[in-house]
Image (cartoon, rainbow, N blue to C red; front, side, top):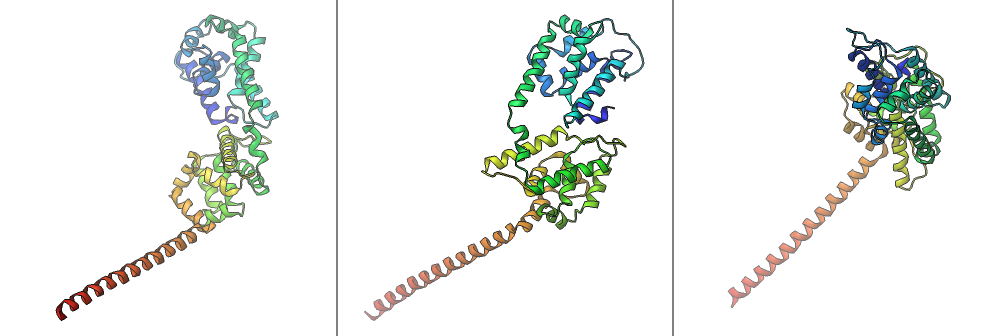
Length: 337
């Protein structure tokens, strides 16, 4: 169930279960999920804390009226928490996005408004944090996302080749049984794209089968039936936005496979796949220079510099010989005198 969420949100849901178990609670409730989000380093957690909702206060207030169970460190999700999680997944899939904290928070507000008895509303009131303030946080975030041109600009800047890479990445993720499109799937797609990036990877013997095996070993199958369409992980979306920003900053209208490969070489998940095959990012950069012909340019520059240096040496020696000749003639003149 929670495997459908982004890695960051999966950690939050597991933290909610762990917190419920450690506190001796029989079930993980929506209140525990709220606490886990508030305690997290996500944008949602930071907004909640900045607005005055403190995790310590929440943790103190949750035990009121919650059944206790000793011995388990992980508590199963209650029916209401499961319903919240499933609704978050469905809402995200309807929008072709990866389920994450945004959707969990939205569903938490829906639960809070409908819940009887009103446990979440009561909990927030005990923390001097009315529900409307939580609603304002989510609404402000949605408005900000709608007004942010970065969110979809990267899609407009895709070349046909880059669009094909994204399709290949989804296909690779689905074949591996992964629940999201991540950076290692983009690397796999690049290796099969036939462009300059693929040639670069082939130069260091990183073909598609080898990359696929390394990815499968590092990230085992998560689900037998991946969702359709497969959502993109937040980290992947942020990476594509960064590629788009770089293209804009350099005055380019679009970006291609080489731009994407350069960005992937700065991403930790990609670097782990390379490291598993004993390959360093520097090796990839050197191979890319060869494919693009930069190494030849560098060689030509070196030859040019070498020739210039030789010419300077010859001129210097010639000048020195002339100076010595003048001195010899001067000495001969003195001897004749």
